[in-house]
Length: 396
Ligand SMILES: *[C@@H]1O[C@H](CO)[C@@H](O)[C@H](O)[C@H]1NC(C)=O
Ligand SMILES: *[C@@H]1O[C@H](CO)[C@@H](O)[C@H](O)[C@H]1NC(C)=O
Ligand SMILES: *[C@@H]1O[C@H](CO)[C@@H](O)[C@H](O)[C@H]1NC(C)=O
Image (cartoon, rainbow, N blue to C red):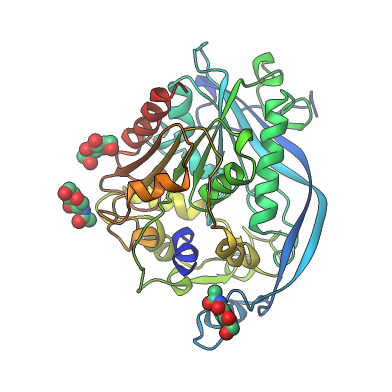
């Protein structure tokens, strides 16, 4: 469990133009606000509240104090979450018709960022995953996880948790599959291209990064027939202990106090990495990134809810037992949070295959010279190609 905790933390016509994407002229995208209704349960956690930087450090200390209640003892009750949330997303289809147009990649970003993780506006041809997927002919939907970006930011203690995020992903998947992603949503900016408004995928591949990978694994575990393929990046089921890493590595502060301008909508219980150097240690390895991409990572940083962080410890069981699609894990060779900075020899493919016994193919790709932030590292597009080739080899 501890290694997992560480691993993650590792109106229709009033459309404004151009805001949704860095290269709006080469692609067709629309930014939407999707109403997502869920009915599930969340965990009530025993933990200190976080309303200041001093509280944030105290929260970290509490979580890592030798004699504090352990993760099981900290779960003190259950809460029903029956609500409708506004989820901000961006749907893009390739400009030219392509064989893969009907395959939708549904991408869930990880902790510390929002959907802009997938779509760097610095040298998009070298870094933007959205750009690469479109160039390969796929359609792609990216969205802001509940509590980040332009999506709703409900209670950080009782609502924003793994279970809730998995249900949101499930509902987004189902709305997308029905062809109503755009028509059922409020359109905010971008194109009104008919191909977007009526987009109905024949296949949906779930792509995640870090926490987003954990959510995507949760989706194929709980709802194995609702996904056609899984690419889990920044995530690897490892077989090594991670002695030197814990929550303190992240350098959390109370989001609203750290940056009142950026995080005025984030209330009690939202924590954020305090400095650019904290972001570097978690996501980037010296010599494998351009400094402007660290600046970009810093610019797009986002808070995480304290209970979402804790709930990650509940993520793992016999994952993917009934999932029949292809599964690929993609990890940076130098991922610090997932493998302690060196992912060589940290996993056993046969053991991973046992947790996906009926999957079409199970693969691992180690991207050389890369930290946890795969889309922010040099040679990123060659890594994307490894996933596209993997999908291609399994008919997607
Ligand atoms: C938590 O502590 C309880 C009581 O000491 C113990 O029974 C349980 O095994 C511990 N759980 C974990 C996950 O360490
Ligand atoms: C991982 O293995 C490759 C191939 O043997 C090697 O070139 C690389 O330096 C290793 N990575 C680390 C971080 O030691
Ligand atoms: C770039 O990534 C590809 C795909 O993983 C790999 O084959 C190649 O060696 C990488 N290049 C460098 C310079 O690391």
